[in-house]
Amino acid sequence: MKKKLKISVPTTWNSVTLKQYLDLQKDIEDYKDNEEALTATLLYHLCGLDPTILPQLDMSILQGIKEDLNGFLDNTDYPLQKFIQIDGLEYGFEPDLSNISYGAYLDITKFDELTIDTNWSYIMNILYRPIVKKTGALYAIEPYKGNADKDKDKWLDVDMEFHFGVFFYFLTLLMDLYQGILNSMKKQPNLPQDFKSILEESGKVTEQLKHSLMGTSLK
Image (cartoon, rainbow, N blue to C red; front, side, top):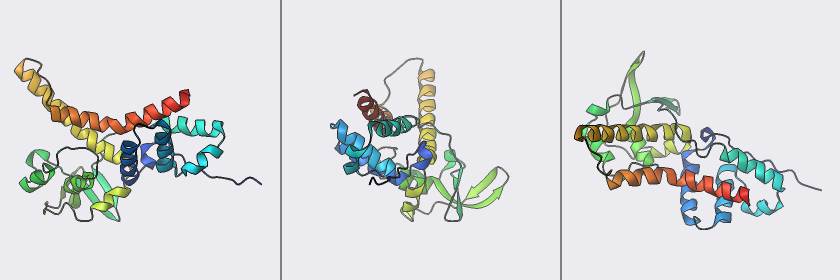
């Protein structure tokens, strides 16, 4: 008698948490040279599918899962969401980045790169703080108190659409800044190496996932 297996397949990044993404990111780096292991890792972290089950699946089912995942993996450009409710408390994005407190600025610049990695929860704690006043579109948040590590794990359960929205908001700011510099200098210098590394790192995971799926599908 065959056993029924229920497989939950996400169709958007809204169904994937930061914790899942970070775990997936780590394993992808470990198995980047093994296409079969990459596919098994992808299905394990995003669908909860045990690698030992893969050989038992019909090819049509496996192909359908891959197509569903491939439909959203390379879509990471989402809008910034200024507000979020976590455990009944509303948090707001830093409303005036040009006047961000010196302490918050120092703590953010402690990290070598602004990218979604194990340090991302600290950065989110600095940028999003509890709302103390809200009137229409205007709002105020708690002053930064140098406590970026306080309850930082709360961000692990927030979906990746939210996190990508914050991340690409900053990438857009960086690109606009560099474009303004280029225009003012009337020439085209090379972009700083650290900016290039940020762009490369931001796309590494999704590109590896996409290539893994496409390569396996073609086989």
